[in-house]
Image 1 (cartoon, one colour):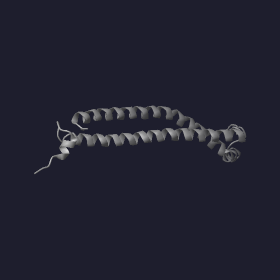
Image 2 (tube, helix red, strand yellow):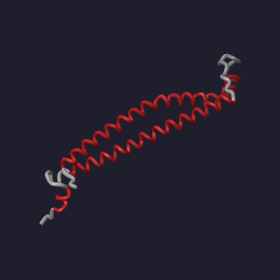
Image 3 (cartoon, helix red, strand yellow):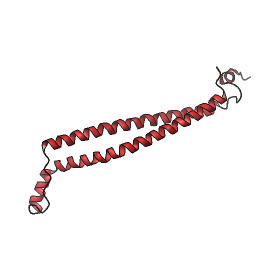
Image 4 (spheres, one colour):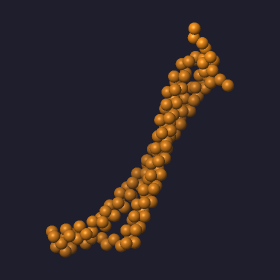
Length: 139
């Protein structure tokens, strides 16, 4: 079986197509992940607000009259547990998608290296197979 320049050209086209496919997939994953990150930030903000309850109570007692700062949201243990569970779910989903992006990015880099190697191999003998070109002995 020969590995001719036409074959190299075909491989180059297919490699470029695969890169485009991976780039589209990365873009689609980014579109999916962004709303998840927004939701995660909202959950984190609610958890942090709940964790600051003691400090808030001290602040309202020192600097303002009761009710002047507003009445804090009462976070039940069940609500805090559900928020923490939601945060963990979002973290897992985000990590899953980010891993997929990373895999595809590594694939793109690998394919780009292959493309460079194929382009260099293309110069051996334009009309000869690589096997024939490799068999040529320089005197």
